[in-house]
Amino acid sequence: MSLATFWNEEANWTGAVVSVLAAGGTGVPTANILAAQSVSFFSSPRIEVQVQEVARASEQMAYANNEWYYSHRSALIQTDIVTNRTAPTQQNHGTIRGRVRYLLSREAQRFVSPAVTNYVLLDIEELGSAVNVRDPEGDREDVTSFRHRIEYGILPSAVPTV
Image (cartoon, rainbow, N blue to C red; front, top):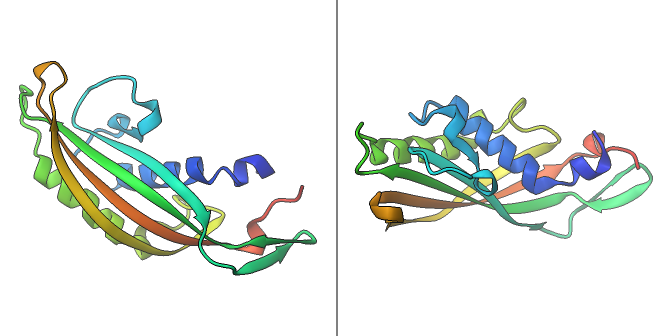
């Protein structure tokens, strides 16, 4: 893995969360579980994943490849569950929401290889949720947004050479 790909933590964590949700039986088709930035259509039900605020979590450092680096990291993950209440086939928003919350609470069981590589997940903290209704062209989309803070470590053995 290249150095640039390794440190692209936003994309790496987005892929990991999408992978966990796609394998977790949410009731949402796998094709509709994706990074929020790649949503170019409005089919539902869907789950949109966005990783924000990737940062150093403490002053803890580790040594790899003759260099020191901050090994304790954190990120904020926002997961939006979107269903359409006027769809011809009923979309059970509550069931999808409950399954997503359950999967994100199972960090020790779900956020391991192959879903998560290069990082060791230390904690997932649910920061809360918000519920609202979007009305794009009268479609009446119900949306629940979850926010989770994750803390993770980067092991020296995973850091690629420059």
